[in-house]
Amino acid sequence: MSFLKNIKSHLSGAAHAGAGSHERCRLIVGLGNTGERYSATRHNAGFMAVDALASELSQNNWRSRFDSLVAEKKLELAGASTLVVLAKPQTMMNLSGRAVKGLMKHYGLSLDELCVIHDDIDLPPGALRIKSGGGHGGHNGIRDIIAAVGADFARIKVGVGGPPGRMVSAAYVLQQIKGNDLEEFRIDASRGAEAALYLLEHTLIEAQNHFN
Image (cartoon, rainbow, N blue to C red):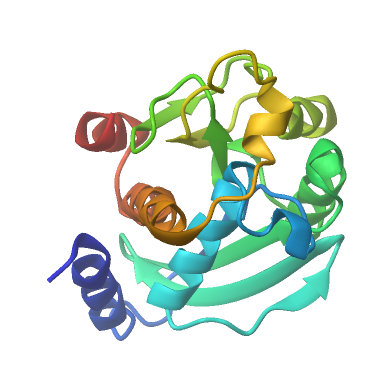
């Protein structure tokens, strides 16, 4: 049984426990660009990760809210009823902050209840890093979110590697991936979904020790 299927089974079983406990909310945002032109690019690793997470949680009922596509799933986690909100901003990458700010305001969330999944050219393909706070590292989506809501939120970075030769970074992350390379990339991105699920029931340090 895969890690995702194992933790999904655990979460589903826990959903019947602890009835009447206090409800909390967690927002998991995957970054990407909208449209077919960008769907199979490295810059859409966040979208792919959130799609994988939605599939594993059997929640693919997306609806448009606050400049995003949003799917919700209620789970019982750590003795508390938890509304897990999955979101894919539809503003295009460079304006992701507007969508995240609207979602946080609507759900009444603080920064420690937000997790953002995104691509990172400074990590090799297949690598994963979890951190909280800090700068944007040149990522325009993270840059805009920090400007809109602040920096102290969890980030799950999916490694995509750097551009070859003299290719500029923007062209590299927006380059179409095809065939087996695309399938391998989707598998790499799905590890971001694993990390997000793990974070729902573990501390940041525990998640870092497990994945970093």
